[in-house]
Amino acid sequence: MINDFFLSLFNRFGLYYCMIDSDLVLHFENDSICEFLSVKPFLKKAKLTDFFNEVIGQEEEIRKIISGEKHEFSIRRINRSGEHEIFFNLYFLKHKYKEYPAIAVIRNITNELLFYHSLQQSRNEIQLLQNELIEKNRDLDRINRELEEKVAVRTKQYMESSDLAKRLFLQTVNSLTYALELRDPYTSGHQQRVAILASAIAANMGLDEDTVEGIRIAGLLHDIGKIYVPSEFLTKPGVLPEEEYNVIKTHPLRGFEILKEIEFPWPVASFVLQHHEKINGSGYPFGLEGEEIRLESKILCVADVVEAMGTNRPYRISPGISEALKEIGKNRGIKYEPVVVDSCCDLFRNKYFRWDE
Image (cartoon, rainbow, N blue to C red; front, side, top):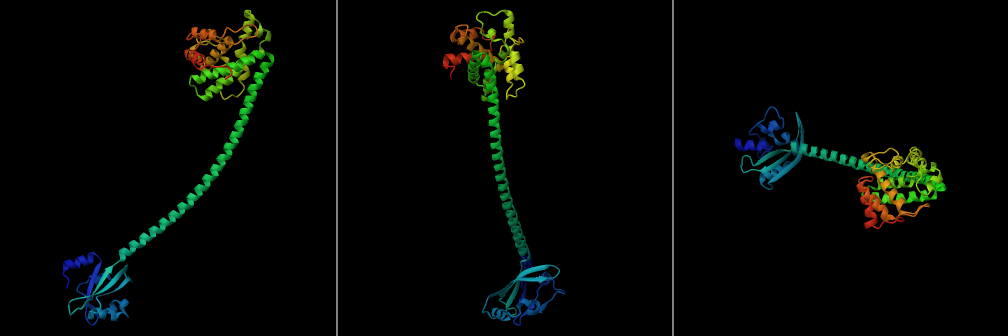
C-alpha cells in the first residue's frame, strides 16, 4: 500500500503503520512496526485487541471510523516495556481502500518524553540551584551586614583612639613649648610664628597636607634645645662672644636629643637638627650642603631667618620684613634653597601673608 520510499520517511520520523480490515484485524505489510514494538516472530496479521490491548473497550470507536462516521481516533502516551521502554501515540484513521477501510499509525514519542523528562529535570536542578543561590545571597547579605557593623565599630574605635593619640600628641608638643616659654617667653612666641610661616611656605610650594603639618609641628619645637642655653645668652644685646655663641649653636643638637625618643608621625627630630644648616655648608651643627639637608629643614631655616629679622626682640628693634626678604633674596641659591625663597617672597609680596593668619 505504501512504497518503500514513503515507508523509510515514515520510519525516519518515528511513524509506523498497519492496515485494519472490517473485522478489526491488523495486516502488517512489513516488519517495522513489529520490530519497533519488539514483537517476535514478526507477524503478518493479528487481532487488533490482541496486539493493542489498550484498545479493549474502544472497539466501537474503530468501527465508526471504518463506517465513515468518524475520521480519527487516538490513544496517547502508551507505554510498553520490552528490551527497551518505549512510549507512543496510537492513531486510527479512515482509509480509502475497501479491503482495508482503516489504518493504524504509531508515532514514537519516546525521545520526546525523554527530552521532556530531561528538560524538566534540568529545570528542577536549575530551580534548586536558584534556591541555593538565593540562600547563599541571603547569607552573603547577612555576612556583609555583620562586616559593615564590625567595620563601623572598629572605625569608631580607631577614630576614638586616633583622637586620643592626637590629643596626647598635641599635649606633648604644648608641654614642651610651655617648658621653654617659662624660661624664655620670646623664644616660645618665635617658635609659633616660625611654625605659621614655615607651614604657609610649604603649602604655597604645593606640598601635601601631611608634610605641611609635620613642618608646622617641627616649627613649634625647632628651638626647644634652647632650654639648655642660659637665658642671659639668649637675651644679651649686641654680638655675643664666640664662647657664648658656640653654646647657642648647640641648641639644634640638644633639640634633637630631646625629640628623638618621641614617636612623632614625622621625623621631627631630624627636621629640628638641620634647621640651621645652609646649602653652601656654612650652617651648623654639621656644615651640611645641598641635598644633604632635608627640604623640611630648608623651609624652617628660611622661616626662622625671616621671623627673626621681621619681629622685634627684647634687645633690638626689628629691621623689618623688607630687609628680611632682601636677606633671603640676596642669598638665594647660596645659603637658602631657591624654591623655598621664592615661595616665601611670594607669600609676603603677592599673597599678603600675616603672622596671625
